[in-house]
Length: 277
Length: 246
Image (cartoon, rainbow over all chains, first blue to last red; front, side, top):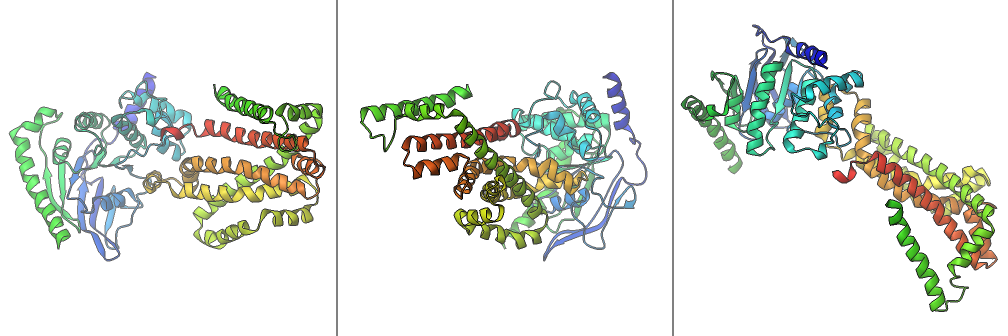
């Protein structure tokens, strides 16, 4: 059991060194749906091991951007998505976690967690062993054979995250994973995610509506403009890590929040005005 | 516990039957006493057992074939839109032909074989299964499919790991419904000249005005239907254990 956990650590901590070449680079990525333009020339780079959070007004094309990075949508011609400097189909190369946990009710915790690994063709037994070793880290020890219906919202979300971590990719895409949770559970999950991230060290692109969450988690916060979405602002967050909840009330945190809030509100007003017109 | 839940209403019904016949002086021509019907079944035990098994066999073969064809059709229709546009109207048209007319043709083709009755049972079974399986597959959350695709899943993976299990609750709804239909199909098939089977017994009793034998045949038919339904319900409870918890 100990050996399996060690092996797992090795497996999951490779590639923590930052490199000059970005892990993921978007260059001039646009996307139209018929006459509607969802994205306009998005340029974004994410370094290896970096935790980037993305905020923007609703309807700004965040989901479109996510689907493109997950490989589920193609960008319009002219745009490029590079993974490790190579333009390639991203389907199956990015660990993607949607807003809803989307757990399968006929699979227990372990079997839900190994779904991606199973699709990749890993032997079930071996994948289950890995999952069993990870369960404690994800606060699921003792719940391995429970079914999703028997779990709380926070636990279900952790199973979904474990499934995403088990899909062993350097780049993880999290789409408002804590959006449906109550405030207390949410705050706990944020700290827990930072802890997991510092141990497993993956590159993360995290989408959220919540400015506090964006600042608290990110190395860098990216603000998107109203539709058609593009990058309005990028703000490096130099708050010390590990971060704890007391950070949320410091002047440094509030200064950053003020700055980002202005940017987001300006864009939200544009969306609102466009809707009213 | 489940057995008890099943036994209580059955016993109540039996008591009601016996009680009503005795208290209201119902003529045995309309409703013979239950113990007389059971006595007749007991007296001709082997004959009823044979009829039960023959009809059960016919209905089951048609039922299983119908279930398989229904699920496979739903899979094909889901994956190939053109196939669905081409064949689905034919499926619907087939259901507008009355089962009696269809039965006559099938018996002409296959003669008095198990296959003929199974074909009629099949004819009544495959359509509800196709429709429900298709509805179940189409009701799957597209975000769920997107998630599997992001893992690099093939269409085959998506079918086996997501679409089919998701559709199981609806498929089983159709199977429960079809259990009775398959039995009706087998009985109609027997009416075209079969000499063994519950349907054949029913017809013989009717022609000879043997009211007790008629009721005995009806009970035997109910036993066949109940058996198929019971097996379906058992398999469902094992396979779709998560249904109630959704």
